[in-house]
Length: 376
Image 1 (cartoon, one colour):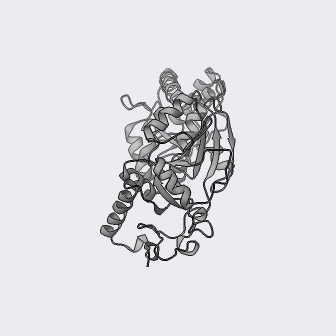
Image 2 (cartoon, one colour):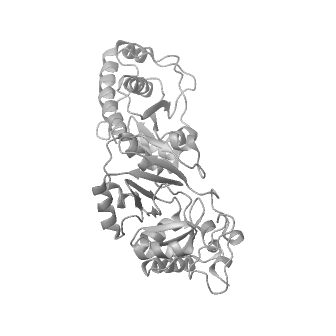
């Protein structure tokens, strides 16, 4: 009887906590464990020279011979990100948006950066690096991230399918793994089939933003390329004045800026919009004065699906932000008043001079917010 015979979900909360604590302790003690990621099950060891030697003995030789021998598995990107030297917003964006996730990143870095990484890990040259390359991943799985974090040190991992116990790739531990008597790790966390059931995909990345997609498995090219686009949703009350004005100004901002490999998509909606209403004539006129054509804008009522579409939701007032979060309770991390200190007053019914003032206010705020996105 091994730990794989009992599913993690069938344990009581107390037993689950004890199992995770044991797993972290095994890693600290220099032993291996088996646990799930969102891609496949992995054999995990502490990321040091002893761990590398142990994992080498437990697994078949790596099939990727032109990249580092092992991939560093981290609980949090913040552990390593400040050490990198990245000249491009594209490079920074891809790392930040693909971590956590089912993507292995092979990053090119100068030797002095690789030396800093080796020193922080306490590993010898050639364990997680090869020439100018460094391989890492942040799994998007709560068990893996908690165990790694609580162990106090990053890990090295390989799929169970290439281990001495593996059979079919490790996507379903109970079906794909066979242990001989007495040879199983002391901690095996079985949570049933992995989400993707395939190994992580690989992105080769250079500091200047150049990248090349390697082996695509758990996720495809469209998933990775999508990370280069930020979707912004502007929200007001009726979607006829402030938010369409913000949408038009943001589209013009995006059209005029110098391309850098990142893109911004923009939409707008209203908390209490009259579906299909046109933008106010004053809004159309003020935007046209600035060389911006709003087109055939029609008001849209905000829906949970619109909020899901957006990476960022900017509202005209704090009360709009509260309304968005009531409509989509899981959106709190991405909803912000465009100006948290000075709500943008509704100009409806006011003279066109008030609309011009609102456009000036929105223009300055949008310039600041979109620069934050593009330059992150």
